[in-house]
Length: 118
Image (cartoon, rainbow, N blue to C red; front, side):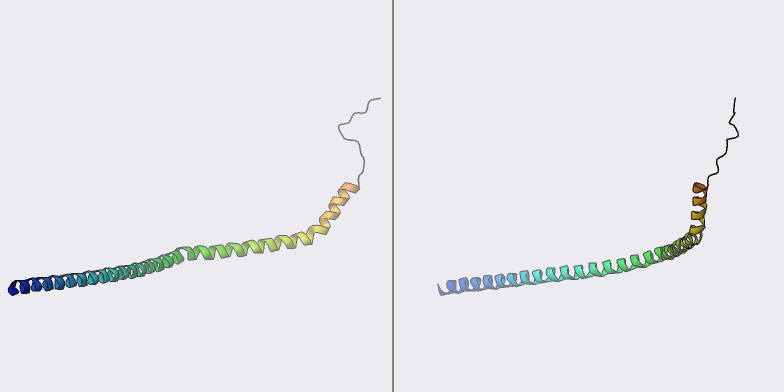
């Protein structure tokens, strides 16, 4: 009987060691999955940053000329407004005099198509 109980004890110990190894393997698998997930996230972030940098570079190249064009248009518009404002102030008084003369200085005369019949 002692040999039977010894055999059972050995089986129980072997089962316990197998269970421990299985638990350890599960823990290692969990750690490895977590590590792989973190590595994948880091790689994705690195790739995303690289692609965004390339996009910004291409966008700057394509939009850079448009940005300069926009600045030139803005400058021309400002210059035109400045010229028009100067012209307005320069000619305003003379134009007001002409308008007031046309309105106030009326010389009544008969229209050429008017026929006077007696």
